[in-house]
View 1 (cartoon, chains in turn cyan, brown):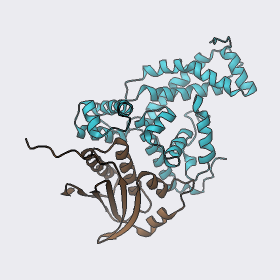
View 2 (spheres, chains in turn red, yellow):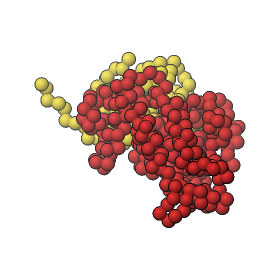
View 3 (tube, each protein chain N blue to C red):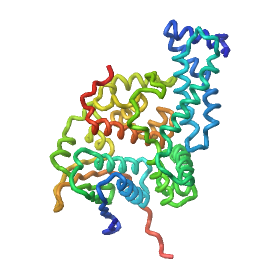
View 4 (tube, chains in turn red, blue):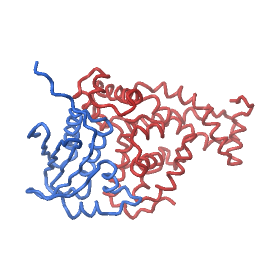
Length: 257
Length: 140
């Protein structure tokens, strides 16, 4: 791929890998986001919001950029595609519905997630359950049931090795474009916190924003670029991981340096 | 299992087992819906409840009793019986950079206290919420 300025992927990759040019890395991420979006669209309507899948796919893109071997005669897009798809598929496998939830409830849960975003913007505040029910044209009880069914979603395997990808390699930092600065700031403050070391970088950021900075879920959703309901799931999952960590007596574990 | 004492008070007793925690969450959700609380306030209440039920201090008894009280501008959750010493230690721990129960609850609710009742100790969590309760419906 060649930019308007004439620089090719290969030039950016060389600048990043050989010179540590992070701007070149950002440029590559930005340039290939349409590819991520296009691939994510294939997996939309399966119980996840498109924007959440785009973010997950972006992690695959970043991994591909970071792992790319510039001496290989392959295009970045070609190399990144299986990484992006792999990340999206892993997301579905790891964070799928952990118990059998009727399809209707799953669909309502997804619809509510979208309505929550829309109503929060329209009303300039968090909507109430009756407002969500009216917008979704269902009863309040159905809304509550669908929200509760969302608890069955998003459980990551707690026995999985922490910080490792499915191929066993350590995962690179899962930062995203302009958010990188926030991740770094968060890292400074939160990485040494006992118990937080079991969380991945995004989980640490979200926990930090919620419980140290006092941001609301909707504010975090904007900050991190995922849906509000996904923020809710990530918070719960993160807390569950920390509790599990404590319960298994891994208190002596050394935090990341 | 749920026993409504009055329009502004609900008491729920459930087995102290994770599968039943969802029942408690649903009851809190139902109350939040009736009170027209925002989704975010509902989430805060549910997460506060879960945090207590999952905490180290909540180890006593085979049953959990969740008492929900609606005030003029607040919702109170009383959860018990619990181990006052263990929970007290958890709450008293310097939150610092740790995700302690104290850190979680102080973000999610406005007031936290441990109280002693007839059936033992319980934690009292009060969340102030803008109350826009709907007018009573006209009988059909």
